[in-house]
Length: 341
Image (cartoon, rainbow, N blue to C red; front, side, top):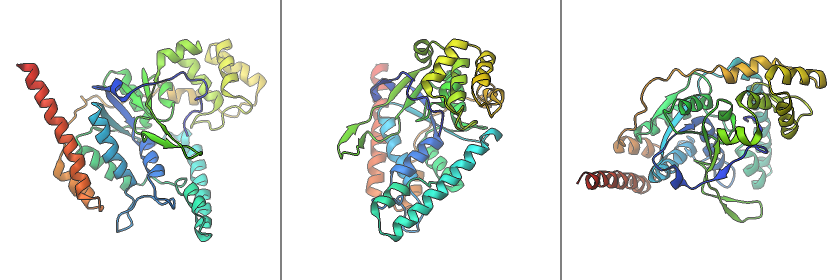
């Protein structure tokens, strides 16, 4: 779900070319969910091979990363570790929502309701251990770095960005801002075009959110931003404070400034049913265990083909994608030689 602060966060559309040469830490779980929910057939079912194995994630990772690499972007994928105890309530709610969606999908199937099948088909996606391992294997074969976070992937991505190991964190959610990533990129791995409810297609461009711009325009610091998020609800306190929306929460943190004073006021005026200090600590005390240099390796073409052919991908399309990467690498080498001479 992520923190719901989209209405008040300043952002700007950019071009992929603006990110050329930059290493960007991508929240792997959010990206995999995106592929598994959007890369589907007309009846709502995911792409599958002849053995019934889901392949939407492999398709997304292969083709979208080729596009990113062609744009000169250096993707780094961050995988979630063990979720904090405070997140268990949110995880339980998500599981219940998935079960409900799955029941509705089955009802739609029984009625041969293709619209219902399409609507509910992507709402009970489960990222299994097998999907995670397949994703890591393909990314590494493509020469793309994979980092296993001890806990939340977005926290790790933001921490790497703060340490200048990458330039930015990339996610559809806004949580990385709470961990003070200097830059957050949205829509990085999204399809470049999206069909609207009216049937028209619109272009989807990356969005850049700068932490310093957020702080300046909202007139708050990081502690206040964390407090604002807690008031509207995070994965650690779903729902937040009942009766508080994003704009009113912003007014409160602007007025009372310090966490203790903010929540002293909130406790007087609203029903506070969670320990705000525990939630605050989750965002403020995260530490990364990654202390290595991030290394981008050469594409292992044979391994890539082995992985994808096993799942019935078209060999011609695989070769076409690999040729793009090969051409890209050769042009880099040629450019290096030209610069040398």
